[in-house]
Image (cartoon, rainbow, N blue to C red):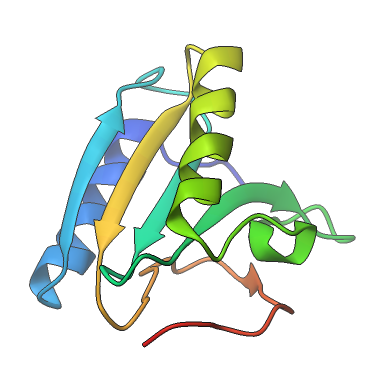
Length: 119
């Protein structure tokens, strides 16, 4: 199955978040067609999560909550990871969602084995 161009996928993600009452915006503009994306979700209480694309065993695109790798929930730790990723990959899109409920608005499957923290 062919993926949507990155720009269309990101526009749809931002639209879903905005329609639900969350704020969403592009922090870094990546490659229009093929750039990967990190999604940061700030809960506006000093905690955050970051989601990165991955593949499951069937070869389908999923997102991984990087809390399973020990990144977060402190927003400063998430921001440090995002800054390192940004420096490594100029084609990387970074989208930030501000939502007190911590919703990510991803429609792809999300591997999220870490407990949620914060309110």
